[in-house]
Image (cartoon, rainbow, N blue to C red):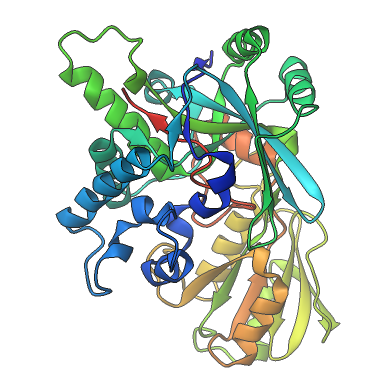
Length: 414
């Protein structure tokens, strides 16, 4: 059962929130962060991407960069740009994109739940990326950025969300990317208790986005427990910062592929090879979006094609085998184009669906890429089924948007 708790959030005063809040550390590079933070000493990038305070040729993993993160984190608190709440709260955090709003509960999730796999993952993590974030959590003694969880829909928790959002939000702004961010403090003791109790009835939480951050946060908490001879289990380091959304609120966006060459085939030979496992229908010059599961959109030589996987080429009873990313990886990328490892092959690149299929067309038309493949998005049910069966999704399967804004609230580990 999911063990969660309220916490004393460290957060910006209302009038400073738009200056402090930032995009997550992993969606932009150092140069982009430097540009976004230009002229703004209050930007959270000074804590989560502190290399921006050094010359551009400084390695972001240099020990002095991590030390700068702590220095800046302490300065933000000293200057009153981040202020700790005096009582433990949950918070409601909502995001609006294209007129659609999703509402999550900001909470402290339990380290042991991660170690015991009651917080379920669907992706592999890389040790180097985990270690980078672990250093950041250790040195700041805080979860500066939240992780993004989903949970099975729950009527009582939905009722709490509905009640809280009737009140005036603490923060309410539209970021420069056009996404709306709305944030409420839950200070009613009965509601706080209800949230804790209801999560105890939920068998598992699911990592939607942020597998490396989740692993890092949980592993540092686990490490602190091991190193404390007087460890009791109720210390703040036993918990880490998460925003948990009801599964039905979330929508996974497509994650598409572009490939540099046709593995020695001509376009007609490539289309012919596809016909073995797909019904291939030319769709003309207009952008064509996949219509349903097992239907793909292909862009080649200025034309769009609909590809529908033939019966018998996939297994709907196998949570991994039924995924369109598996079908396309095996039957197109591996068998025809000779791409065996999506993680390391330099001939393939991935394009988040937030950029639209125009981006695929652009990259092929420019001559940089030879062919583009658009996939129908994975469903939340598929993601949860895969996590429940202990399976791992192939690389670059899910894309969540909008991303959580960092800096609305921080969780200190002591």
